[in-house]
Length: 418
Image (cartoon, rainbow, N blue to C red; front, side, top):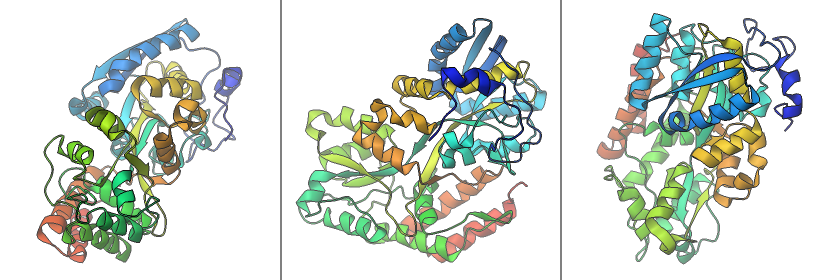
């Protein structure tokens, strides 16, 4: 992959205008960014650990841009959505804000976000991550960090069951779960979240891998044969007693995996640290991570956060220059080392701290085939409806066809907000 985000090329890149570069959408309204270094105050909002750590990186940016000062405001996640929405309504936005990928459709539709200038090349980013920035054909942000989901499994239990390699297909995943649950093995072969908030993030990879499209021609399509078949497969783990149909108490999933009562589960890269901390030396070398299994494809969920600049920004040029600096591969690596957020810039994955870690390498490969939910303003409402039906499928045995129809009916009533 080529990149123009090196120190040598920075000045030239900043001089590019909105002509002649494919930024992944209709960029006719994207204004060029001025030449030279950043100047003036740049105000930034960021959430969670990112908001706490970004200040130190802002100081490093100011060393490269001595006439610029970055002021970072840390915003709690539970207050962030309303804070951004209120700021847009009052036209009191910062220059830059971190925005969760599932919020892009809503905030992109407001007209408050500045179209991404073409000094950013979409080819530098994972395609699934870049697509989260695109609303109605126009990119309104830049991916900052990413996460995806893969399968954690106990290799010692797999070996005991006679399995020497991770599952490659849906059938092999099911067979592995059953084999590891044989007498003397785990109580649960494959832990899945049985509905409730966020269950859709574990279910949709199966739907996408089966060729399901969630939106087509501007309308939700949540009751297609492809999605129903995926939901039937997902349900089978509960009906076959391979997955528990109740939510574990906090910490129970990790404890069960460490003690061997749970043989496998789906999650993101953050879980490795939790498992190592809880299991200590006893768990070392006894588990691995595998990519999502293949049906038609082997697609997983992609999440993370983007960086957007507002149209009302007082320092638009400085804001985009700060975003571009955060997109440099070397800065992305430093950010990973400080916060453990996975880089959205593909070039950063060549660093040994990422490519040399076998588990992270699996997530890096999975990011090559990962999707986000549709960038529509109403997705959070539709996701809640999907979570509710998944719970009925897992706990009450509702037929996948009936569940899919119920979700489709609710989604149609809600609309895409287009």
